[in-house]
Length: 419
Ligand code: DSN
Image 1 (cartoon, rainbow, N blue to C red):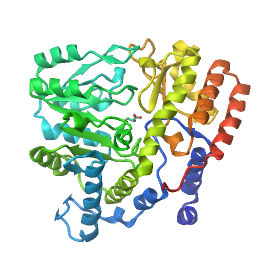
Image 2 (spheres, rainbow, N blue to C red):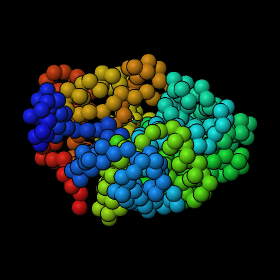
Image 3 (cartoon, helix red, strand yellow):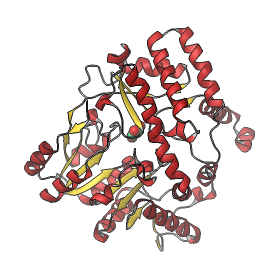
Image 4 (tube, rainbow, N blue to C red):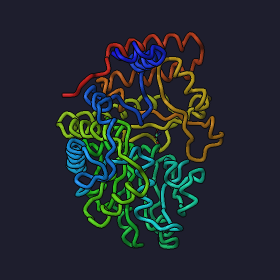
């Protein structure tokens, strides 16, 4: 592996090898991360990285597009099939790009978006004041009504929407463990003349694998997503349009030339490979197992009377109040578990009493472990190990956990391909 880098740039090769070892011997529990197939990696490392392809298949600005057109068309067709969409744009370089392009496509400066508050599970690009898009568009944020159940106050959302007249009602999240009531979102959007947009970055793989509801089945107009989380593709973004041709034209114009330059064709080839993998029947099994595994972890934490935000999970992630459950801050928990070979992230929780840089929560999930072939029994053991470390907080407990985690990891090697 890395034969050429090794010869030419041993320093970089050493770093890459270190990362390979970290991934191989540790366990990845960050719910937005996953392990891609060798085929996806090959596409990412292909000569398509050499090519400029501004424009869209059949309508490029530069020559030499015989193969780029083929690969982008395939990626588009597969994405449409996966999500039941009539149109797809596979060029966004990431999830944030996809969201920002979507805003530029659908809004005029000063227009309003109603989206979920970051502290209640939303995302920075849903209108957090630190982002520049808030200088251009007006973001009003909704929250959960009850953080112990995750219930969203749809009656309040309707009231607010009627008052502020948003152009977009945005569903979706980066730290919310429950299924949303898509029907309610769409009915409110229709009532106030807004578009219903879902940021499905976290659960795109669950939707594609039919383990979660598809917002398009409920009338959502647009889905934005990343391609590298539960969808198990390369890092990247994707915008899907359910049926409206005019919307699709606006999205295409906003992505290029509105917002981005030349698409990353190697990344688009890798997306096509990953979409092909997700279209196979085995991906449905994978998506279902992700949720079964989350429930197995949830059961262990419930048994330990730990506080999980929203009381548990319907999807791939759990948000745990480490401060209340173990007297450990999110930052401390992240560091302790990292030393034991378990990678997860500190996360603010709703109505957090601690500061954002060292909040009360930790966020973790099962997509990557499930890719490694972990089933309920193994993930339940991982949850127990987490509890042991967070309770004892000693070097001895960390060392013991690290040994067991490494054994678990090495007995479930990261797969090179999926059937
Ligand atoms: N960083 C991503 C996540 O972890 O959810 C969101 O952008």
